[in-house]
Image (cartoon, rainbow, N blue to C red):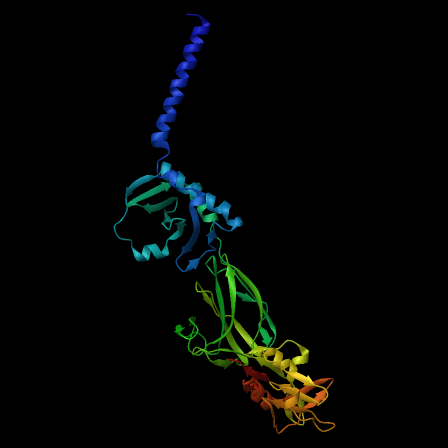
Length: 382
């Protein structure tokens, strides 16, 4: 036999062996189930161990895609190399709670739980079967993807009403959601649902201060501490001065950082509990009476006022022809075609007309409350 013929036969035989290996590998080395696990088919992954939750992974977040690919790689290796047995008919609730696990949700709505069943073994249940794979490196990769969330924290422990607070955390747990900030003065209570606001309150005595947003389980926002918020019944409820808890609820977790709330540094005007930030909108005190800037208040509550320079009148839902000119040195206020009466005369200071709170109530149909503890005049607009 010539050397060339022997080479041809050897090459042909090697090809047959290679082809056979591919066929065998295709039949048994990579199962049909392994092909089901693709990174693009995963929508989100939530991990936990007892009451410890970890930062979830979301397919829509670019930074999470590499970690999701690692989880899918583990699942595919398990499907190809793992030991398959019948899954338990019922799960042990206590064992399920305390084990370290990842709940993998797929785009089609199906899901499975990947968990550590023994120190060096991973397992998952699917279609009535349990797949287990003992591989120390895979368990280490699994554990490396467990990242504890950043605890909820404010940027300070004391704030004045009308001051700014920054809140950060990564424990929201959902792709997009709401973050509710409450004030509580008596510590933890019993969670109750507010039908008026469709919000779960930490207690019936809590005050809802602010609603922020979270994305990919994370949040970072700044808000103004209001003078009043919403109570469980949906009505305005003042903020309490002094030491209290600012309870943060993400719908996933709840935390209660302590906060010292101080009164406003000076007299403030607020609308629906939110302090006005414009210096021109702040009240003044004249002859022991609190007066507010009429035009600024009108803008804040969404009402219209006009100034009749010729007649020296402030007109509210009144035309100039309906109002009588005011005497020299005085300013008139006309509401709905009638001269407004007040126990306090309007005054002009630095070109701004100030009137009594009672005048504002009559002119704009708002409710006014004096929040003594926090030094705020709060106008409630329906």
